[in-house]
Image (cartoon, rainbow, N blue to C red; front, side):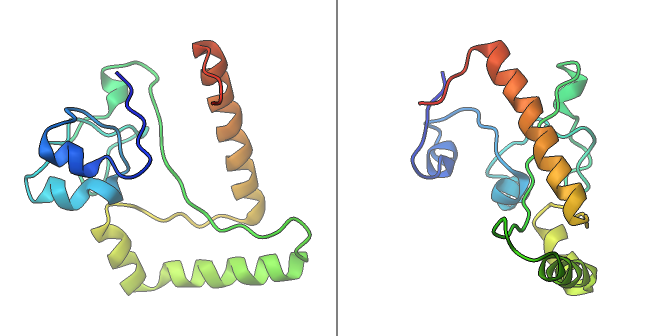
Length: 141
């Protein structure tokens, strides 16, 4: 049964009121490492560097892949010069060993992209999930 939460489901998951949840690794990794949660699989296309012993859900459900991503955006009319300077600064930060170490602790791997590559990712993911929603008859509330 789907149970929508306005806040975090984590207290109910840890307390046993919820038996299964799909969640991003950075949100759950500390509880997994501490043995408070049992991870069953990862939903990405490949194994997680942070949880390398877990299978992918795609090994059980063919072609299953669902990955979360975050990025930095700017208003539509932001000049290209500013976008590219900001992108270069973000990329430089992602090369910092301390930043990489922190991302690794959180169980995530940052990926540098050009603004065009990130825009394409957003379009591709939107198209992918629109097809899933349509096939499943899911409508926005």
